[in-house]
Figure 1 (spheres, rainbow, N blue to C red):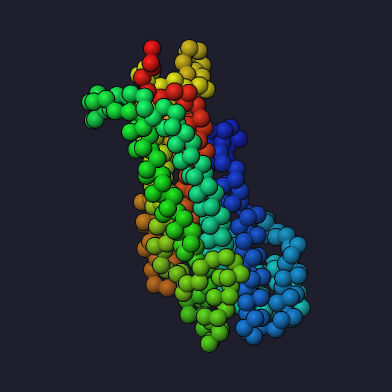
Figure 2 (spheres, rainbow, N blue to C red):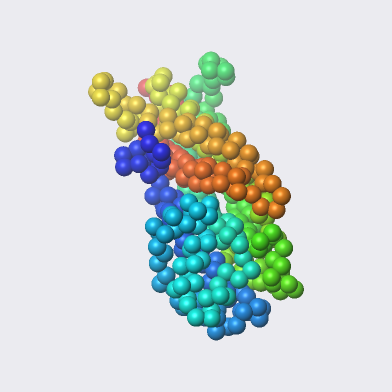
Length: 353
């Protein structure tokens, strides 16, 4: 047992996803925050809010900026967020008159939420690509074994004969719907957060909309008015993640049940037992069920975090930090496991013998 099985030295052999985990590392977070600050300076210079020389200095001097993570940890303990200390360090690196133009008009939540959007978008692109691959792999199984007879079960009891194609369709069809949903979300769901102290961008005056639109374009995010206290987009993404893992959990449960009976499936590469060497445990199938249930539980936390009081919240916001990265990682991990599991299926359906 550990605080994070996704990064544990040996449990990560089961739950690990290095590609997704890296997106939630401190380094990736800080890099995305620096992207926000440099893009903001450039957008503000383009609108005449700050001088072009100041923006150039900010971009140049932050290009090789390395944060003092020990100081950041102490800063978070005091301030509750990393940005005040991070901005202090970045201003020291920029130095001169340009330093005071760094972070102009922004607030901590702008930086943190936009960093999150940048990294979530990258994660969603990875998840979409993996979904596509898994759909293709399951389609290959249907093409190979689809006409084979299979016992259909209703309410855990043998019912009537179906085909492998019927069962595989129940795995593929929802995954295809989820892929459409994620692709749609990728088009418009990841929005820049830029609202200033209370969401009004009061320091930018008439330039507010222009700067925010340019900032969004530079970062490859959607342009949307501040959403400090409107977390429905976060909850919607979490719902999509749980839909994906739920469908993969159904796939895993079906395979585990087929393996229990054994006559209608032939698999390779099952897990071993320390006490019973003859066994091949359906480890991948079981893990898909576990991760589906895990994400289903985390959904309640993300719905709780919708309650952001007034213009900005601390409590609801922090609850996202505790749940959302784990949901994303669980989804990425589930897709990797599902692809492995599908590759272990040598035959589906009753034997011709």
